[in-house]
Length: 337
Image (cartoon, rainbow, N blue to C red; front, side):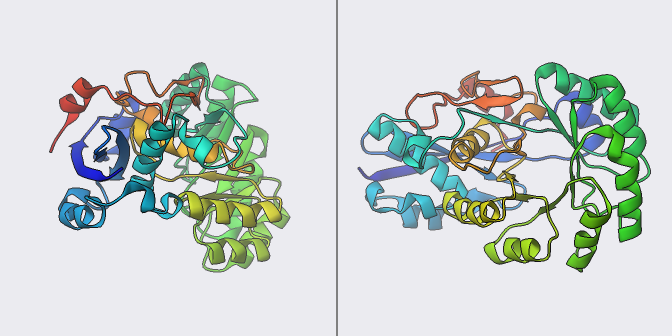
């Protein structure tokens, strides 16, 4: 089977109104179709914020077009084309993509809800909406001036079992502020405290763990960096990213230390990246925390329902490949190039 063509369409799908009002962000995403001479097409997705993949189309075609599909080492491809290739391979062999990756540990993969920095009342309203949709965890881009009040209102709106993933992107600053806020947040079911303070000195994170009861997480990638954080006693959980091969290695290091992980492979994508990430995560035993893939914060995920996102989780089908059928009317509606 040969690759015959690669097609790109970039879309810009608005966020849902509550997020759109407070985010000020625009995140285009590019859908990639990889066509073959056997009539099988695989889907991938590229983040157009960081780079416009269409500008690299000539070099990409030189690497792939005209080549024998089965000669590529799929597990080591980059995320975009790895998705498309597992989709093709699964369709060719008549099995879902995860069957080609290893043992499946879960047939559905939970997603975390997400919101940007927002007033406390607005965040609590979004959390209540998330809980009603079946999400168990809400990831907050937190700020030290409002996080405690926000957490209080979320507990009031959603009950004591709804979890909060606090992610201030180090905005809490220094160790003492991080400790103080962690202590104030103890009553509010904090799932993890992700990158709360500056991390140039990992001893701060080790001290934070010693002096608080809130689980501490880091958003890190790369085997050496993950190992360094574990050796420094800096983490209770890890948020990481990568392709299948890289994630398996990272997860294995964390598993040896009995540390759970979650992934943020793409974040602001539509159904393609999110579904592929779910296939990957379903085969990693200690990737047990809700992942940071966010198709649910856009007004359309382009799947026409084929992604099967319900009760805060992607439920993987047994359809061959990714199991997706894109809504092409929606793709064209939001297409910008």
